[in-house]
Length: 343
Image (cartoon, rainbow, N blue to C red; front, side):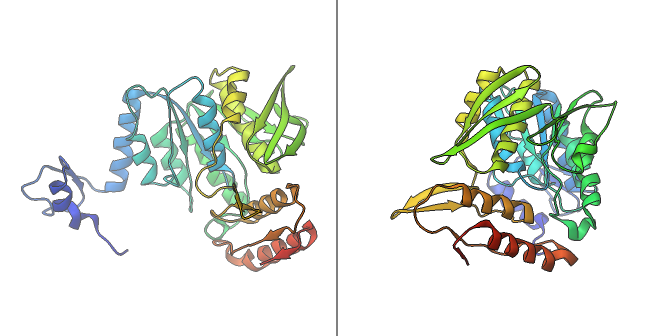
């Protein structure tokens, strides 16, 4: 709304760009340029073409909450066997995703691509460009309900992930989520993970938290694998289950996958645990939704502390008509959780 990229073509050339991709005639005279109808669409097509030249094993990850942590854990797992590119920061949209794909190098053997959205059709476009070999949907919550109308609308928007996937490809979803657990398909290999649903293919057992770490066993088929992650909160167990399942589908050994999860490093301001002047601070400051607030409060309460537990909560956006009730629900949850002070 504020800036038009066409105005920056001359300065881009001065700084070393070889050519420009533009949608306006006459904005790049005397400069090598390609005129297209829609630069955003052209960028996606260009990135798709480039990725197909290198054809790394590609994992596409989306979901209402948990996708960035799952992305980081999945990259940590795949990195035990493959040189792996991953989405950096929050470059998970129609501009960020093609930028990420264009970062691929010839020796990259795997790519873990996060896909975010705010409206219908976006995941479809992102998936078409990335062409995932393995898909992951972490959850269906209420994020972006303002533009999509209902959780069912969000569910169908997230399912657009399969639009860029080949038939027969694995689609890994949380079997404990009320909507994701209903997925049935003869066209894709549906794999469920979770803690509560008996039909889950990957299940976490014997979950224990100590000193900022969580240990548990992953049961799949007749096998079990012990895992320790440097994070707390049951939501991170779910994220680790998804990453482990991806590893199994990608040919990583169970021991290698566990080693990758053990060395996972949180991204940005997501559950960074910092000690300051005798106070333990959990820094968890990205997009908030009811589900992520619930997970944050649960993580805070799981910490073994001698002093008070204080929650500092900010607002949740893009909730539309349900905004007031969802904020009320989080306040109620905070009151019932056992924390000592809410700011």
